[in-house]
Image (cartoon, rainbow, N blue to C red):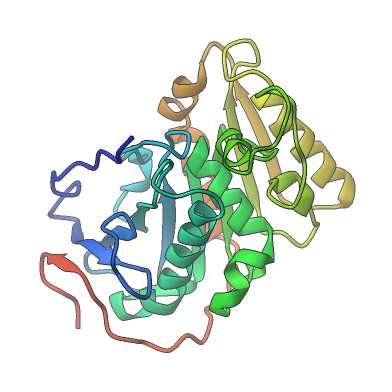
Length: 281
């Protein structure tokens, strides 16, 4: 299946400057290896949220919690290659490359590389979790999960993702959990950044999804992680969790931005991509 990506302009042109189709991979050969960047006008040293869409690693389009476009933070909506055109670990590699691009480039747009938060919905939450918890993916880019300001994970799979298991021909039932190096649950540490977990109702979301997230939260708390939250939204199914997460996301972001994350000393390479609006000096 293909990635259906809206060509509509980014939201609120008066409050944001937009750059779209920005390549984040070295060779820039695939249009799916691009991102949309929206930066708040008249702002500096702002935080940035990198968001990955859902779709089971086989499809997807723009889907970002509306609350992120509050005029206070930059938003990066990252595309990534999909099955069956590619197989694991291409998805994880693309997600890591997109996050690394933001670390290396956001200062040019006025952002603070010490305030980068990554998140996603469903398959996108899986990608944000594995990239934000396992240093294997970001390390080749000279970035490490401890540099992240936080993780926003909405109904993500914390065991090895269904599509990854299929790609790698793992035997067993679709719902037989595998917790190996490709599972976020294999990379728990009290040193991880603050984490918000949101799922739907345990009786309505994807089977076992709320339980996986609850198990991860309980394990991290037992390990001494200082800032882990897990919320199950009563009466909401998988998609409903995404549509109803704004209040939790807004509060979590507010708490993170009060933590005074230290800016990183990142050089300012040139920007690339198709611009919408006037670039800041």
